[in-house]
Image (cartoon, rainbow, N blue to C red; front, side):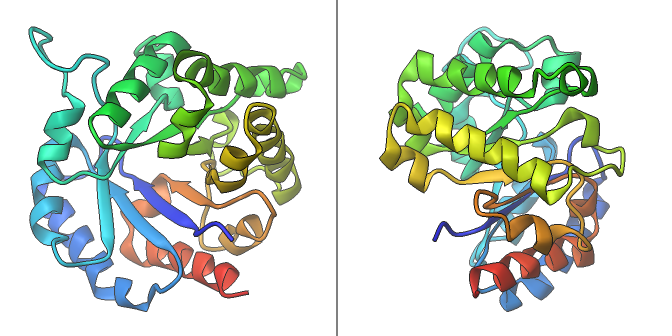
Length: 255
């Protein structure tokens, strides 16, 4: 069985004081998490706090983006090697908000993915459709294009080093969640898509659900055959909610 991964995407939220409080809250309850892998992705300025405060704990951490370049004259960008320098394990790539607000293309995201893996990071590759695309019956076309961008650029073996997160854009921050059956259908499609290139890679690939997972629906979602955890947005900003989702992953993993 694939180990559940619960990763918190804090987005552009919080202050230094908020970050300290939230990390302390997670640290206080994480000892109860046995079967799930736990990670948090704070904003760039607070990664140093994660490095300091999570040392010696089972909680991993990562960033919310990295550059497609290894370094040099790229003002405002952050290289994968710099994130590794702070002890990061993960980096979120291709989030719908970056695709939407920053104009990121599948080609650019594939280059970022390549840089992240080369730098020793495990990318969390986000894929997902808008409401208009879902209502037009284009869900599979969209998520296939998103995951194919990485496969076409670096080969299916590139996915051995990362995680995929299905995030239906229509369910992010809206409080609306895909039903477990809707989510499972897309997760199964993604695994089958990868399996066409390598059954081995598909079998070990963790595919997270990233659309308004909350304590109340986390266990039901993660009981689906192809849902291997969650990329958590709003609920990751409250330690008790985040830990409750982690415990739901534990419950599922324990059988």
